Image 1 (cartoon, rainbow, N blue to C red):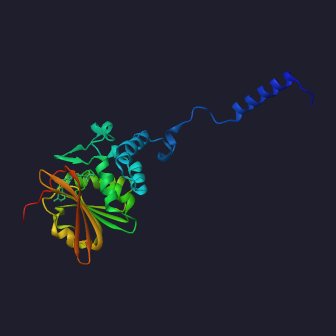
Image 2: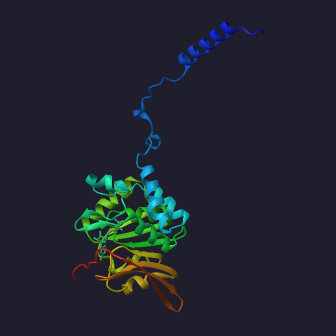
Image 3: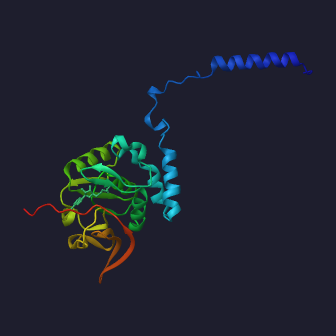
Length: 249
Ligand code: SAH
């Protein structure tokens, strides 16, 4: 066909007219789109949190980093603090308690070396955020909270988010959860002044426990149970709320 500019222009106009007529309308009604397709505005804030607060301080476990990128931390803080959820600090969650700083959650999760083959016990459910991160990494998570309204709120949120492998119980976690023992991993997110012996008993041989220990001055302790006893390693100085005890019956 000979080169014919007017014909080409006409064909192009026809093509775009057809495209407009047949194409999807520009204004898409999103109200019926499934939730998973709506962009999560917190995704980029989580990405920044992982890069600048967690990877930058040396946490490198790929599964832990992926879990920290996935769990919607802003849903675990009081609604008025949602804007602060990805900040580099702990936040109040009511009842004088706090949700831990993101880095500390990642640090403890990495130290715990959790895999899908593991059953994990957590003492100090609080907001349920650490439990959700563990729910991403572990097979089953058992978590105990002493403040009933916090435990109930965390249970409801974890259920709403689909963490069917996370089981919340309200009570004093000092004595562990004997009916579900032994555990491959144990994490305590409130500070006792000594390692609670019932938790050591409920740790499987070959298992790892990570917990802050101390009163005013606290250190993170990583404890491994071997056939000969326990090996304790003290790592970083930390500041957690104290592990409280329910009054003896
Ligand atoms: N892991 C939590 C951090 C919670 S702060 C999170 O991700 O949000 C510590 C929590 O431990 C508080 O909620 C506190 O009420 C709880 N706690 C303190 N002593 C406890 C005990 N003896 N048994 C169970 N929970 C306890």
